[in-house]
Length: 399
Image (cartoon, rainbow, N blue to C red; front, side, top):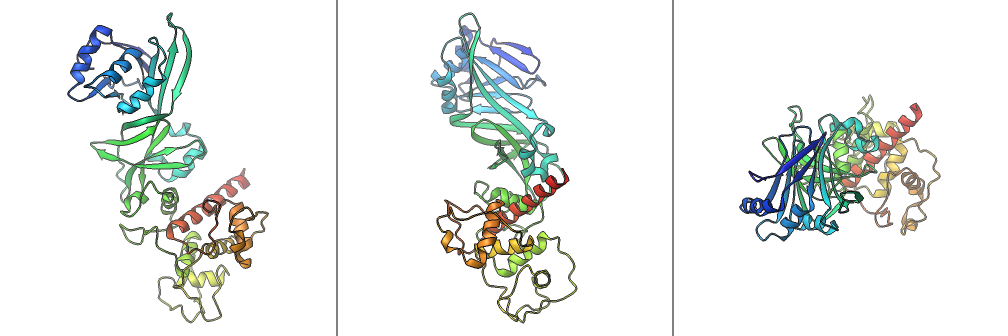
């Protein structure tokens, strides 16, 4: 708050900022040029939590010249715009209440396994932060009568976090992600300048700043449903881009591409034989994969001589390939609850039951869309789900 008369009391990692009522007008006047009132405790290295009195929040929300509040700490900065700050003000019920804002850096060892697993490939380089906002209700005597945590804001909060980009992260792009309690991830674009990663959110929870393979492709939208799967598939070598800059998430998958994916999945084992199909030329990029798939009975041809490498693959065909690759396991799963279960070909039903049972295929809006041609994004999802399922099964077997 500039040179204004404020009092800061520090207790371990927590600071309490008090501004006398008579000095608030001067503080707002000094903040008018930027339009944001700053509470800066970044010089206090151990402080990541700041408590602000109700009169500060009230003064900012009523000000005509200042419309936001910035908290600056050694762990990072947050700026609540006018609407986000109004969310906080609406939760205040008396003049004795206080608002506690926190920007804490979290040790990766303290992150639950299910939250670490989706970004395990970049875990050593990720910066985890926990954002929180609480309204602490107090009576006239100063006794705490309750606390309301605020997770969702009716406005935007800009978050800036120090991040040192590792030298060995070539070919990746810095992004942010929100990690839900169940491990699901929502990605955000960030701006990165002078060692600071900045993103905008409308809720407080746990976030991470990470290096992304997928976001480096110019045709990948980090907000799309496929982002986590594509990121995982790229990080684990299950898929590659169509070029250095293009991933082509919407491109349809051919039979040759599908077999190549499974060949990659298996680690590209050496093949001594060649494919027997007349339409699979030796020397083609897919020839080793098809030779391997034929030898392992992963994928059959249309006939003894025809494989049709350029034919597009449907979702039920891709699921069947994965099921055959997995060894045609028996399944107790069912697809009867899906609206289009009757559209599934008889030869694909067991494979789809297996895929649904093991979470490899979920469908969309209660439809499996078995006859729809599969896209590269959908293939990434299936390959990722299969890889994660097998990894969990191996971990369970070891335990």
